[in-house]
Each structure stands twice: as C-alpha cells, then as structure tokens.
Length: 210
Image 1 (cartoon, rainbow, N blue to C red):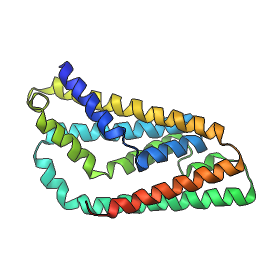
Image 2: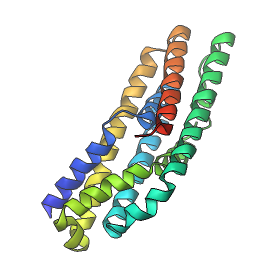
Image 3: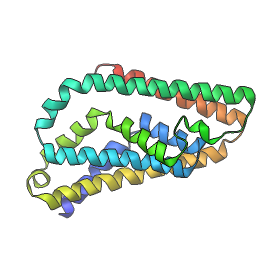
C-alpha cells in the first residue's frame, strides 16, 4: 500500500514541478491579488491532476485510443485560452502603467476571487490531454497499482493530489512574495510584460508538433 502512495507522490511531483503556463498563471495571480486567490488556483490544479489520476487508474489502456483523436483540438483550445489570457494581462498591465493606478483585485484577469480562480484554473488544467496519458502510462507500468484493488488505487490518487497541491501552493506563496517585493509601477510593468510574453510563448509552443 505504501508503495502505491509513494508512486502517487512521485507521479504528482513529476507532472507538477516542470514550470509551464499554469505555474506562471498561479505565480502572477498571487502576485497581483492575494495568497488566498493563488491558493485556490493551486488547489484547482491539484484537483485536476487528481481527477486525471482517477481516470487513469479506472480507464487503463483504453484511454490512449480515446484521447488520441481529440488531443490536437484540445491543444488548440488550450492555446487560444492562453493567448487570450496573455492578451488580457498585457492590456491590463499597460493600462495600469499609463494611468499609474495601484493594483486592484480586478488585476486577476477575471479571477479576482478564490471561487473564480478555482473554476478557471480547473477548466484550463483539464484541457491538457497529456496529463491523463502521463498518469495512464505510470499506472500501466505499475501492475500493483492497476490490479490490486481499490485501496492501492486510492492511495495512488491521494499521493498525486498531495504532491501536486503542495508544489502549487509553494508557487502561490512565491507569487505573494514577488508581489510584495515588486509593488512599484516599474516592477508591476516588468512582471506583467514578462508574464504575458511567457504565457503567449507557451501557447504558441502548444501548437507546435512534437
């Protein structure tokens, strides 16, 4: 049983630690709003990872064939959403810099409350079909997780959720620290521009083959 839980922890950290668009969104959200909002976004990502782990444990080998035909369209949808977020963030950053107004809760880009942040990040994270394929490959590679019943499967999923949640909360906390350190107009301008550029680049990368 402990082996299944440890496997879930490793799998959760494996999918969470690489810095991508979601991590950048959580970091920027915490910096512009509050830790509560960033933490809600972080838990949304962990929820999505946990749900995909459940699907992988229950679905087994049949998932790859089901997801493969729609992986391309889902990547396009995710890229469009990311480009929209990048554009919205760029517009808000430039508007705030021109008027020299202080940051407000609206700078969260429509995710100014914990509930909105949770819903938005949950939906965005679920658009990534590679996550479920990743967990499926791990489950199929561990017959003790796939074949030993409900308890090992539940331990695996719990490990995934806890690992993902702990890492995303670290990112949210880092965003809060960055936000406090860069509260001046120039700091907000630089971080806003860099965040938007990185999200746009990741959106373009999502459309590239390979």
